[in-house]
Length: 271
Image 1 (cartoon, rainbow, N blue to C red):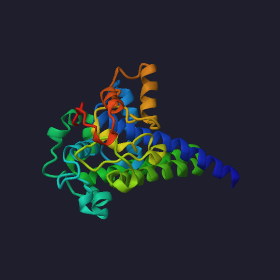
Image 2 (cartoon, rainbow, N blue to C red; image 1 turned 30 degrees about the vertical axis):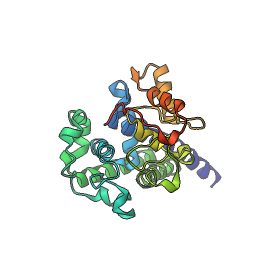
Image 3 (spheres, rainbow, N blue to C red; image 1 turned 120 degrees about the vertical axis):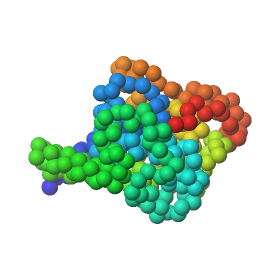
């Protein structure tokens, strides 16, 4: 039993880190916002790591996230808080197709042209794409079961399922003032949650992100840290990235401000 627990725990922790990085620097900062550039094999590695955390179609995920930024906290936001807890956390993922105002041919043209992402998206049939994702995620764990045994497979599965829930719940609480603070006077309700940055690898600094969505770095103030950005910096040192938006414009604006809550800066990217 002790060996089982040790193997399960090690598998869970390693899998969770890989999956959260896949979501953060693969799905989010790369596909959704193009905050850095990298070779295709690096992109596919991180995106696949995110995909195996039950995140569904990368094209759907990135396109819907771009819509979230464009229409943040309005009726056109796919998971706006104004729809209530059920809709803003889970309900929106059960839609049969993309919303009428979210056209992947326009909002995600750079991804539609990629055959890998196009295959996983199943022609915009959202529930079919979700089903394929679930099948492939469980198939991956069956492979782990056959190769490495039950504790490794269960650790990986638990990490993937937890990552799915963290992502969905995060969409809700990251726009609730009670859970965090604001460095920037953005037009939405986004907040920074330093306490959540530990388990989201820097994604908890959500107000910073909404103020400067094109930045690969969410940590802009003293006491903030972004492990995803540190990973991207490591990739750059290893020459696995060719360009990185480090968010220097936002950081300079924040450092010069007397009252951080009143900062207004130019947004470098509106993807």
